[in-house]
Image (cartoon, rainbow, N blue to C red; front, top):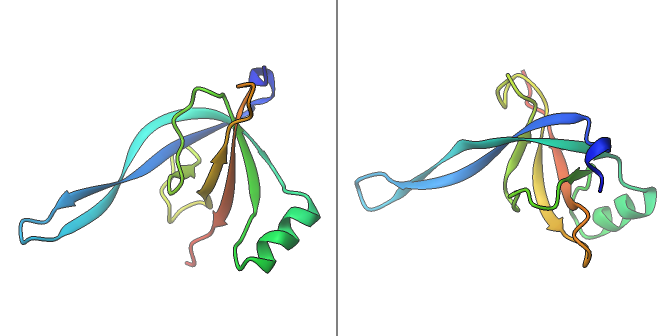
Length: 113
C-alpha cells in the first residue's frame, strides 16, 4: 500500500453540466471531496513522448486505488481557488492490475494575474 507516502491534500473538482433554461447547458465545477496524494514529476522520456504527441505531462499524481478521480477533474490545493494557486488538470488515470494505487497524469495550470 502507498498510503504512508501520500503527503499532500488535494481537492477534487469535477465539471457538472446544468441546463441553462434556454435549451443549452452551462458547466460549473463542484467540489467532490478532499483526497490524499503524492505529486511526482514524470521522467524525461515521458515528457518527450507527451511533447511529441502535442500534449503536456507535468506530473504523476498518486492516490489510493479506491479514489474517484477521473479525466477532466481538477486537483486543487485546499483553501484556495483556481485563480489564487496553481492546480492540476487530470489528463488520464491508470490503475495497475493489482490495485495498489491510482495514478493520474496531470497538467499543471497556472493562472495569469
